[in-house]
Length: 373
Ligand SMILES: *Cc1c(COP(=O)(O)O)cnc(C)c1O
Image (cartoon, rainbow, N blue to C red; front, side, top):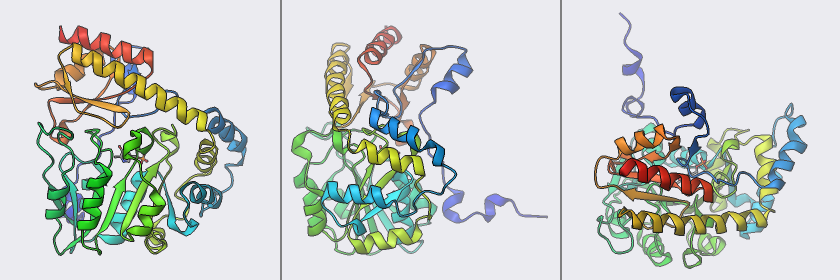
């Protein structure tokens, strides 16, 4: 008799649990027969894409019979200018998840290990396990830590590096906690890690962070040859549906990542929209202001409801309900409000809530107060 395919898959894949995305609006409305639902579950920009990106998509939609530029020349040139880097230091990805996987493929196998923190972004364990590498999971800061409850701890991260470690993943700010390491803490990690460990700094929410957390990518990359910084057009640039992101690194590391990259991994419309969005400072500015106002409103409303939340530098707030949050999630769904359970992150008492438009935030608070009363 033929063996099951389960037993034929590689060891890493056999134990893999797929990434659980936020529930799509269409799916909820189909299931419950309701309409007018809102999704605050995937940290998408509630303003939608900027006018310049939309115009670029319209302009180029009739050219999709052509393959995209496999080297994404124009976009990489624009990013190189933005970050004051050589073009050879930029690797494009089908979303930044793609470049995280490229790092895993280029540097990890069954003989190696990778380090990341408890409560870190789910794509790290998946990418590490898929290539059969060992995961060394570092303890996060305790829940009562003054500035970074459940956040990444530089000391435990460094202590988790062993002789087999090739990659250390850091999300800053981290999803699903929203916590952010100071530049001093990041330097502590970069200065403390062996030079042959690639440090991936995943900065998907970079543009939302307070000024004090910003640093010059070019300067840091020049200083740390083992550093890879990843960025995305999915969050503040509002192009999640087009799937486009990038890695900044030394030219040597970029060359390795490009060897495992599929030739046409970023599509034609995504490249054009991303390029146009980089010139839409107004839209970015508007998105930051909306997020800051929404964050202040929601944090005050949560406090008035007696709810604790984790400090955030991103476009979402992770709320601690101090009891199983699944029934609250379900009740919110029935009111047409989709948020994100994080039980799969070992945080069953929390829900992650994306900061929306003013109207969406009010609707969430209204629904939540009904559910909790
Ligand atoms: C959303 C997110 C990303 C971006 O993923 P894309 O593949 O670029 O859409 C990357 N890292 C973290 C931590 C995120 O939350």
